[in-house]
Image (cartoon, rainbow, N blue to C red; front, side):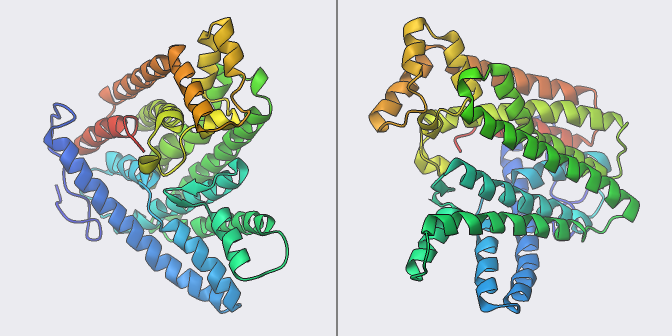
Length: 384
């Protein structure tokens, strides 16, 4: 198999027979990720330079607006979606196909992700993302610094919506640059569109849940996790990659990816639920306890209410009432006391096991099988 960097051909091969978290596979997966992230970021930077320059020709202010959107795209992140899409593609084509023809499609997923993040931050009134101000907060600050009239917060939120919209359009434009046969690209586009529909559905349920938390349930919280996160983080990117490789909807590999992706994606969100309460802000880039402060009906909080004693349940009703750091820390301790944290950890482990079982009988490139086995762990056992 090839041993070239992404810009030339495929990524380096992973040795077979992983034996645990600390074996060479983990180190090689890290190298894979580093190389793929570099290739995706280079593709995005080249594309966005042209796009920002074109918008700057309309008006100097448009150039600044477009540069803000570009900066949020290139502000870091784990590039999880392009990574799963790459392995979905690689699992189908093996190690001999060149990477550059599909790189625009992989990178387009990161533009879609930026669209979702920017809009999500507006809806959640989040102030930080990846350790820096969210788009709407940064734009409000620009409004103040420029001495403009009107409400800075309103301006920041309105322009952030436009930033997200622009990233969505950019994603479509970059996807169209993938050098694959037109009929195949149309099939890829169908998968991409379904991913976007499911993301919107999950986001709506997430917003609805915050306004109707008293009548929410564990099952409904899991449905949010499935559509808001699992679909567009793992499952659909894997299928996106498979369709880039020419796999049909009735292909057995597509069925394996569907089961693996749903399980790992749900586990990914369950880990996010835990990090949202117990994560270190210095590592996650977001304040701890926001989900409890707002009363977001996550699986974790729904389970805590289900498992709580009557007195614990009454105390948990304070979730969503705001409160200072001491009150939120007390609620976090109470959630753990109900046994909900242990239950969520078991749910994560069960889903990872389910995902790995889905790969057992799949006809898949062996390097991709090993990589997806490793990613099932790294995506769901993390600190950020």
